Amino acid sequence: MVIAPGLEMACVITDTSSGGLRIRTDRQIALPARVTVVDIAAGLALDVEVAWRQGMEAGLKRLVPSRLLPAREAWMRAGGR
Image 1 (cartoon, rainbow, N blue to C red):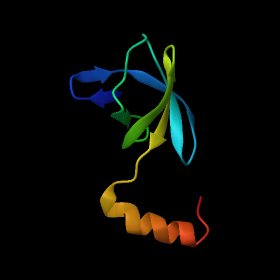
Image 2 (cartoon, helix red, strand yellow):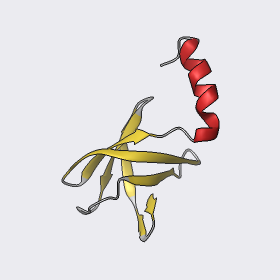
Image 3 (cartoon, rainbow, N blue to C red):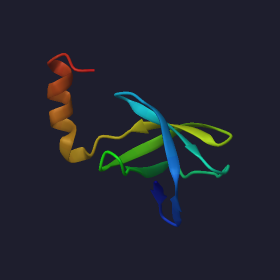
């Protein structure tokens, strides 16, 4: 599901990486700059920023909640990607 103020729409996650994901919706729609994607199968809600849109597909960049930034920075220093 893609969720934003005034928007709740089904989607399919077609690709994932450590930095983001690609989704496909059943219709072409203008997405706001930031949305939440709920991965029902994995039981996750991801805050993301729309990186690109093309037709019914969108590339989304994962956002790190500010409370987790120190943990992410430590992970990066330890060799994370």
